[in-house]
Image 1 (cartoon, rainbow, N blue to C red):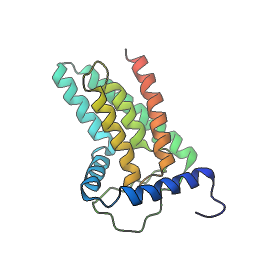
Image 2: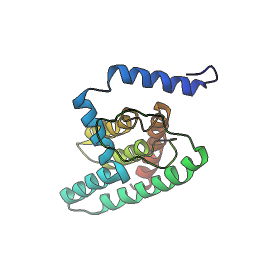
Image 3: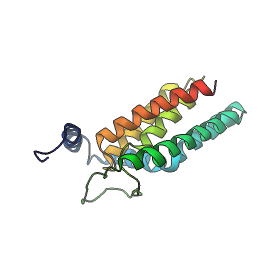
Image 4: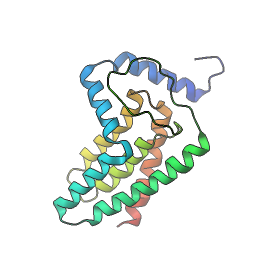
Length: 174
C-alpha cells in the first residue's frame, strides 16, 4: 500500500492480507469459493433455485419474478453503476487453484454480491429455507473476494445495493 492510498484502498489491502493469511490456500475452502463464484456467473445459480422453488410450489410466478428482478439488477449494477465507477479489479499474477471466468466489467460494485442479495430476498419469501438462501448469498458474495476478482469494498457495496434492491423488489412483488 502506497502513502497515497485512500482509506478504502487501505481497508481493501488490510482485508485482503488477512484473507490471504487466514483463508486462501485451504483446498476445501478454495473449492467451495471457486465453485460458488462460478455457479453464480450470469445468475445461473439463482435462476436454477428459482426454477426449483417454482416447481416445488407448482407456481411459475416466483421464478418469473426472480428472473425479472435479476434482470433489473444486472441492468442497473452492471450496465449503469459499474460504468460510472470504472474501478480496476484487484491485480493478481499468481496461480489460481481452480479455473475461473475473468469478467470484463468494472470491479465496483460486485454484481455477484448484489445479484445474490436480490435473489436471497426473493427466494426467502414465505420459505422455511430463508436462512439457507441468505447464507448461500453471503458465500457467493465473499467468494468474489476469495478468488481475487473483487476488492472487499466492492463486495460490501454489492451486498448493500443488492439488499436495497431486494427490499424494493419484495415490496413491489407482494
